[in-house]
Length: 276
Image 1 (cartoon, one colour):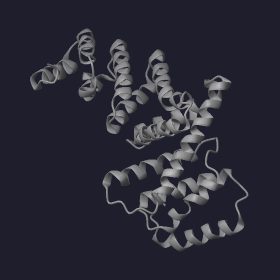
Image 2 (tube, rainbow, N blue to C red):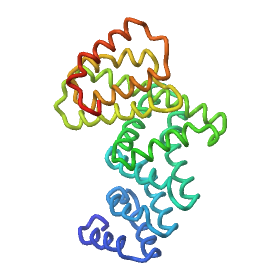
Image 3 (cartoon, helix red, strand yellow):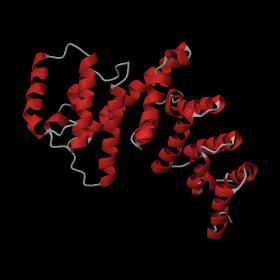
Image 4 (cartoon, one colour):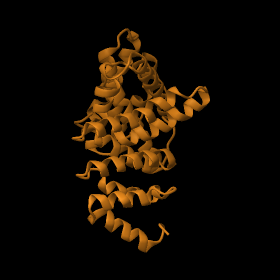
């Protein structure tokens, strides 16, 4: 019944124009089975509703949609809405949003004992995290705050949980670099593949711009071929950010490697745009 076009239209109108109590009842209705995935956009028209009850209800449904959907774009969409609620005026909703993302981006990795399964979980986390970090300017700003002032803030966690966060971000960084290096030599004409690589490099740049150094000398050496390639301007920009941020925090690179980097950058300087 819920998949009927007429019913969908009625539900959409109710989620726009009704009172908070009616919206709450409609949200219950669209939560039946997997219906919430079909209505994820209509549900999130109320993610910032003035009613605390409605905002909490949308948050809970978004958590379910995130867990049950296998579509990256849907996961990214609801994760963005959850992340944006970290600036809510209600403390309970802020805490709820932080906890939901912490559980899905950190705890799921910690809880997985199998290294093979853990690698799969890391791939899934990076896929969503990179989409959120590059969704739009507002999401990017909120992601940077979440990363630097919540995940990497010792005062927000117990000692054990902070260690788990640190270890997971190290694993995510390793996975990111491995993927980026593996696809460096490919000439994919797929827009989706190009977007994914840009998202991943953007995320790596954000990881490099934290108070903690996750990117190692080995990572930098592995990423060096991107400076030699004729990659797109966006890719070069993110790689330059990663190099800049890492060189500021990491010392003892071999002199020959530094010379090669300097020579490469000087040779490319005339073709760089202002941002690069």
